[in-house]
Image (cartoon, rainbow, N blue to C red; front, side, top):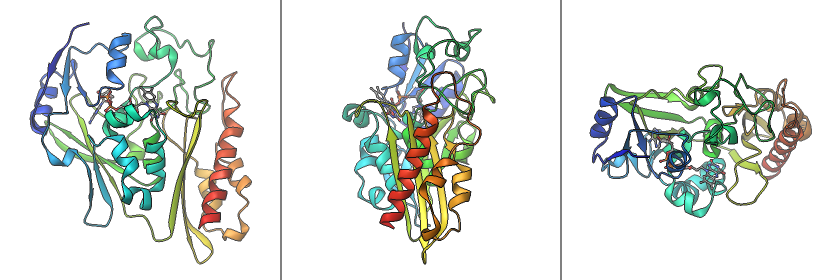
Length: 329
Ligand SMILES: Cc1cc2nc3c(=O)[nH]c(=O)nc-3n(C[C@H](O)[C@H](O)[C@H](O)COP(=O)(O)OP(=O)(O)OC[C@H]3O[C@@H](n4cnc5c(N)ncnc54)[C@H](O)[C@@H]3O)c2cc1C
């Protein structure tokens, strides 16, 4: 297929180019996801707006914020996030999620913005010959087909799981995302950024045509907080999560003062394990039974015929995660 490639050198120019053709132009960062979509015929944009020649410093790198948190530019490579000493020390769940995703090549080329905005991996959506609901077709092929990698909660006609590991960690760590367009800038909590098929079958987030994600901001972690990311997958390298969990727990004077737990691989968006959080919140560490925290990880799961294995997998990952965090706290 043919497309034109535009290479703006400023964020403002990129926003103007996207605004000029909101239905035809899409941004491209590292290209590790979008180019495979184009190659496979899943996406066919008329115009690519390349972000890699943009000089605006705010799109790159990791910097401290005035309140003691950090900001990560959208064009920061995943490998840079995994290797950053400050992130590894203060936001371990994010560093671990970044270090364990994809392959070294993809982590070097892929960006945070691209990771958060990558399209789903459902193999029916990705197959050139199965034009599913998400591609404007009239049916979901997964329900009568093979659904072992798909969601066990939150499905609505479409049963994708959210593919990004960093999204799950960022949700647990209370991140917000910055968005820019020719019309201006806005900031939203990451928990309000991702949307499921019940909101819009064709999209996975609130980004509108013409908008760009410019960065992610993390608040300072509370004193005493520890966080971690665990991921179950079929292969050790280059594989998406069957189920993952990002957990952050703050212990003060022997009691849990804050608990945040998010699951990946189980729902079309990062899934907040609200009942686990409620179980942990305020509880003395000595009164925590990790398996009880894990048992309530997913409220009312509705698995497909071949993916109920994800229910005990989620419970076990949460159990391990809570055990690890409390024994190192
Ligand atoms: C073999 C393989 C294994 C993988 N395994 C994992 C895994 O285990 N876990 C995981 O999380 N990911 C995994 N991935 C996905 C990979 O992490 C993404 O392909 C990568 O992060 C995308 O970044 P990119 O910069 O290359 O994005 P691109 O391919 O350039 O863009 C991806 C999408 O995001 C949009 N986009 C890019 N930047 C922006 C922006 N700033 N604002 C708005 N929209 C934007 C593009 O329009 C496009 O739709 C894997 C990929 C491969 C090829």
